[in-house]
Image (cartoon, rainbow, N blue to C red; front, side):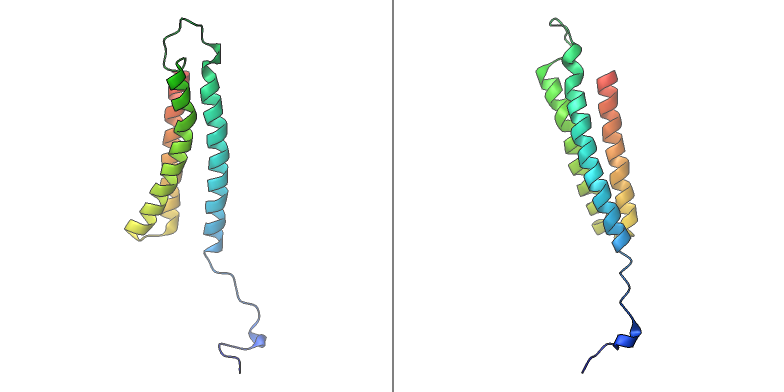
Amino acid sequence: MVTGGSFLDGPERPSRGVGFVAACWVLVLAGLLFALLFGAAGAMSGDSCRPDAVTFVCSPSGQGVLFWFPLAGWLVSIVAAWATVVKLDRTPWLGLAVGVVLYAVVIGVEWLVVTG
């Protein structure tokens, strides 16, 4: 005996969380791609430096920081988004917004360091 309805009820509707999960995956993958590209571009921004240059961008440690900073910011934004949803117990879209804003700040800081 079948419980919970019959075959006449039609197919089950997908849950409302499918759109959120899809948005999360798109943002995670796009953020990773952007972090890798922006990190590589930040590290290569010192390629035009002269040998006597003493700026942060021209130093080997500065180039390492400029490469890893977007990747670290990507990870921190994912953790912050997750923590916002878990700790505040609000809509998951708020956590997603927190992650996106935090990542935008990280990329903005990287941009200012590279161009500054």
